[in-house]
Image 1 (tube, rainbow, N blue to C red):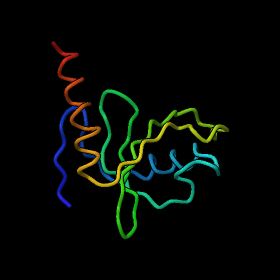
Image 2 (image 1 turned 90 degrees about the vertical axis):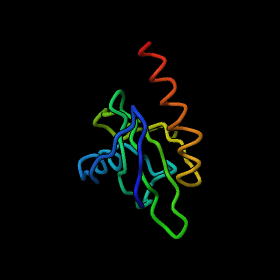
Image 3 (image 1 turned 180 degrees about the horizontal axis):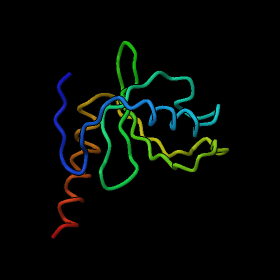
Length: 106
């Protein structure tokens, strides 16, 4: 799939170090525990990463990595939002993030 991004989102390679950080941070009760993912993009103004959840009907997850270097004990961390598909992410996350980003620059 060819992705197009609006600022502050930008594409990034499927970084092993970021995926390893995700796996390191999440507890066994986290929604993404043992779920295969692929890194798609990052926000360049914060620690939010976009992961594609691999499967028959791929979904997307935005995860705010903590970079705490420790496993989180609370399953709501790192904070994670799930989107049903690319269009859901685009309309309900990327476009609002873009508008907020542009307004901050004014």
